Image (tube, rainbow, N blue to C red):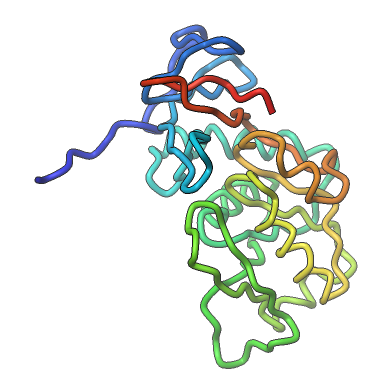
Length: 227
């Protein structure tokens, strides 16, 4: 059977288009709300092995340019006054957002991390990394040694697409620490719940463009989980 492409993350709806909040039942999508009230309808994806728990999903490289631009606008605005000097992008889906944020901050380039090892990369600047969206597909993340001079002694803003459990970003922070780098902050397009608060140091240094709660099954729909 040939599947039709879904229409999620293609448009931004007017404020109040979709009901949201505690006690609201969500069928197929969860409406994340931007600071100006516009809503972005995201697909709900049950988490494997999580007994009915689910999250709203954002796959930024499948999003329309309108949506990507709106999220990058918010992320850049949240950090502009603190004047980051260099943006470090987390692969894979954090990279297009890192490009957008850096351009809006007036930068001429980003420092991209990588999960494909080039022959000049070193084990000393690597760290194992995993993601809830790719269970059982653990990878290694690398910092190109030739990029280190670009971030040493500078105000670094780390950019990723989503923070959920915090394990991926914790691995990135450990990698950067190996190069003596502590980011001034972390910009993400979306928070998925608050489980990451217990994993990442100083959660106040993380800012998100939009937020979504952890969800739980309620028959044929989903409700915001209590925790």
